[in-house]
Image 1: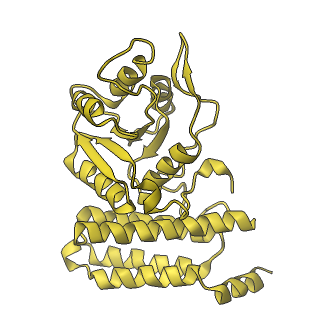
Image 2: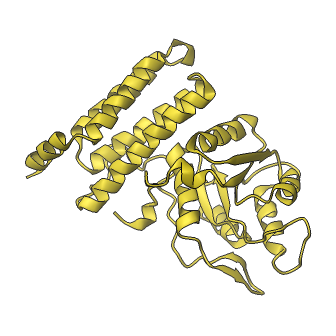
Image 3: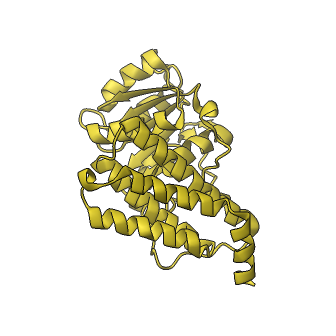
Length: 290
């Protein structure tokens, strides 16, 4: 599987994230809370929030975050202008911007080429497309930590080196759920299954952190399972696919979080985890694929 898909690895442990300070900027309180809960549940040490770019600059000055997740459209100062103001400090020093090179991840529902181009020119490092899953957020942190981009300061552009190609398809809705690109090599299969493990662990931590399965969490479970079905089809793993489909159907049939039984969800998670870790099933898969 190509590195451009940016699948998060289970080798990125909560201990690796415990020293991080992350700033989340969004004018929608539910989105801020959801991103914050995912990051904290994954082990991020400190998560601070702001509702617009101006407030974010104050947090930036006082807390000096290691990574910023920002929405693109916000009142007062949007994500684009926030990014520009931070990068501008590399040329014109700004006492309120301690680190002009801080990695910035734009969390956006905008998918147009024009929007992406403008965000890149502003100096954004990475993108997460709404609606997102835990793996989408964690993969961007992993990328920033393990493969940082060189920082460029020039008359024409200030920001991370753009020469490593970006692909956005991983973090958004799947192209066609019934038409995935098959992964044939062993490394690709391992990465795809590893990502499923990351998603399951992240969802369990999120449910524990929130203390219940509320509407946003139920929606994310549904989204994660759709991604799991897609990845299982990529690696021709019928058992995992069927287990994930069963949970999607359960969530669809229940509909409301107050009618959802957390034990049923956890049971499905456990089943999928066991299927992923079964060496006997691996041998059966190899025979079936031969």
